[in-house]
Length: 157
Image (cartoon, rainbow, N blue to C red):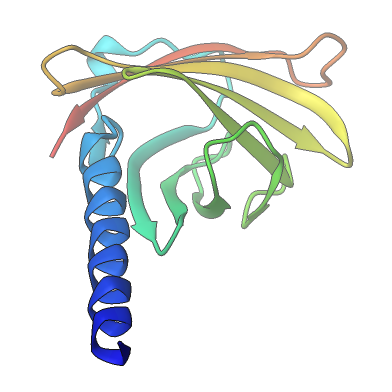
């Protein structure tokens, strides 16, 4: 009886791990993305994220962002959470402190960024059908101190 219970538990555990890996592999955003500046459009003085990395860590996602701020100085921020529309903390970015992602469908996610509980920007992330291009369209929320309307195009590495 104990052996049957142990084997049953092992089968369930392996199935959960396999489903988790399959879900990660199926997410179109997984991997490293490099900015294609020639195809992108930024508002004057906008920060530019040159490299964005999506990776999984357990049941959470980690999004690492490397770029330059409006003054051309290097910046790096980290977000860790789930793509469930809930706010999770961002570290390393002085312009916002929370970010949420919500999956719309297999190739689209919506994003919201906040500073001190106030929405300062929203966006849509779209990965092409072939999985080679990622387009991030962002705009400032009404009343933002630094208005922006950007379209950043990335190539999968």
